[in-house]
Image (cartoon, rainbow, N blue to C red; front, side, top):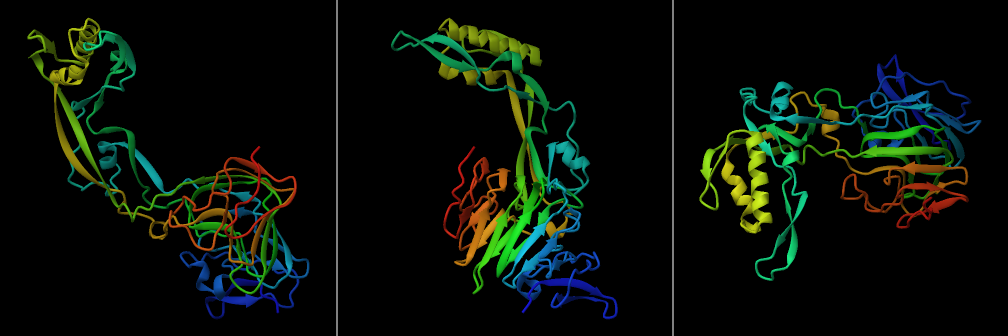
Length: 406
């Protein structure tokens, strides 16, 4: 019995219905209306949602002219092979790289101005005059004399030439939050599922990737009685972008630091020094470095002496990582398992054929009996950098794919 299914829009019943391709030749695509938010397992035990069809006379499946996160999430556009036959699966002709659900803002003021609920609506903007000193890193190496041994040694100090001032709400690493509005992410997207039969997948030369959540583009499901095999026959690059589970970490804390120069103060040798600007602070740091070089200042006191030049105050913020206009469909889809090729169960085989080549992201192939609990970091990493196969390469659950790096 033919078990290739598709979803069509029944204009009489005004609803989506599942139909069989039994006894049919080339089948036209059904309506392109999306079934957003419906899981793969919702209809006929994980068979395809969407409009793409298989020809059970020529034994071909066409994934269509384009693949996008707006049209091909939650199984929409997928095909399922379960009749024990071998099908050539072509496409998509164009794969649109998804930009991902994460946005980055560089400062507290940027988060406030986004007006997306990252901070309470009554949060005041931080004044441009509120600054914090960016010391840089301890990157400058100088030579001093060890007071105990009398021998020379090197120590690391701040380089005055890289010191700067930042707005007190600025963070060099930025604030990673969920993007407001539509989230351009592939969620539960699937090219083909094989439960019984063979799929030869040819994706042309497309680059496949972007923001991806809980997506295994090719799934050989060998958990049942049927033998499921998926063969990758084309040469493609994969660029998966890690996704954050914002529901697991809905907030982040930040302490905005405001530094005020202290004017005139007393140094370690009871002398007076005046610092009212960044330039004077840089000069003070140079003076301390000179004292270290002359063995007049102990290195253990260097940082505390430098801190005498300013006073710091902090304001604490609790940032919501989830905007008020979040894309709920993406928000409620955990990052989950991410793989281009995925085999599960004792009757599953995934093969990179002699014509196939996969380069790029390590999260390409996965062979395991259970889903990883590490979300986008797979339990079994099969690919590392660039792979090709001079002869067919296979893997089964629990095994690594024996493809050498090039």
